[in-house]
Image (tube, rainbow over all chains, first blue to last red; front, side, top):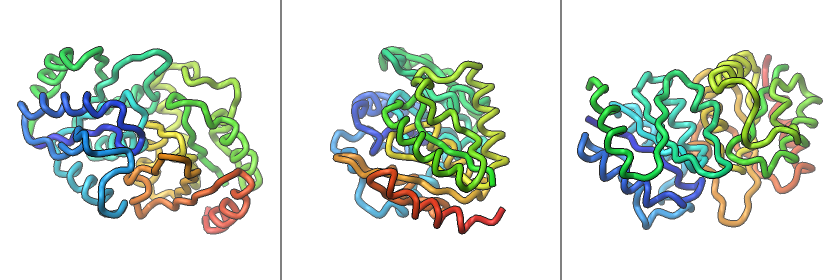
Length: 139
Length: 139
């Protein structure tokens, strides 16, 4: 199975360690196409390469993926963009949200019938959530 | 002309006064479907109504709009989602970005060939940018 993992890069890297932990768990289910999203070396300035190169590469990866798993606690334009694209391509979509003080998930994500939203508190809660989601995917 | 204006709500309301100023300028060119985005009363907790109601209403508005104007300085999942949807529907899209320390626009937005990105410093810079964008739209 090919898994596209989405997390904030230029929107802020506060959660990179969470992304890393999710990616490590996702590797039990298949190939994670976007492993760099959890890289401690990747800063908010983003990757090398032109914006168009990054956009076109990421969209091509997303198109070939069997599913999208997105961490949506940190607001991110790119993650929202990828969720809508995957929704248009009818990919299974799992959004992981960690409720914190004063933060509510976007209605455009929480209110989309194409998206499964699961709340969690720590990455140890994710084992069951990821197992259930991945078991439901035909590929 | 029907204009869909997108700005951060649950991603953070730091820029609501900027959104208000942009909406006021956009009214010179047509009907702004999403005037509430610039409302001082609208907090990050969001609007009343279920997430699904908000999602479906906003997407229906976006579908009928002649163009999308998005303020993208504050990262927002919903704004990214709307940009991708409008891109799929081949709507003209203008993204307004105010460069600030340590903040870079998402490569998924800056690298999309469907999006016109314009940087600005203050809302007084927007008059020319909005006039040029709106003049180029056939509706």
